[in-house]
Length: 151
Image 1 (cartoon, one colour):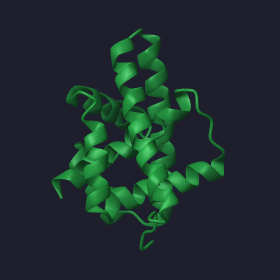
Image 2 (cartoon, rainbow, N blue to C red):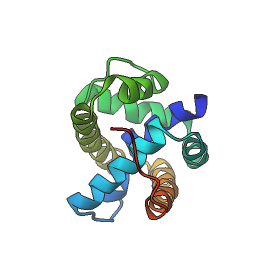
Image 3 (cartoon, rainbow, N blue to C red):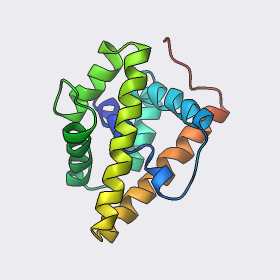
Image 4 (cartoon, one colour):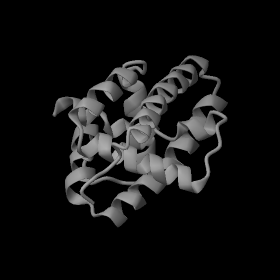
């Protein structure tokens, strides 16, 4: 369960890939939404693999991203990542999850632009590596047809 908590980062970092130069159609983003909801809320195995990707980032970088989103785009009831994941998985219906996803996405993209605009090359590089790792795994889940939830 502890590993699942780290998957919250998917919601906060997952779509940095857009700002890193890859452009997705709305339909593609919807497919990724289902995969990371699966990763967040259903699969312990997916949680562990994503956890491995997240180890690229420093803990303070994850915290800073979450805080920026909370302060500017989407306020979760809980102020720490593990509890925010529980909130997302257990308290939100599908419509609320989509809303959290969309607003968090906008916040993450804005934070990435702000961060890289401040010339923090090391942190930008680690975010890019993390995103590549995460999305590679989400693509694998999608190809295997595992991005299904009870919602």
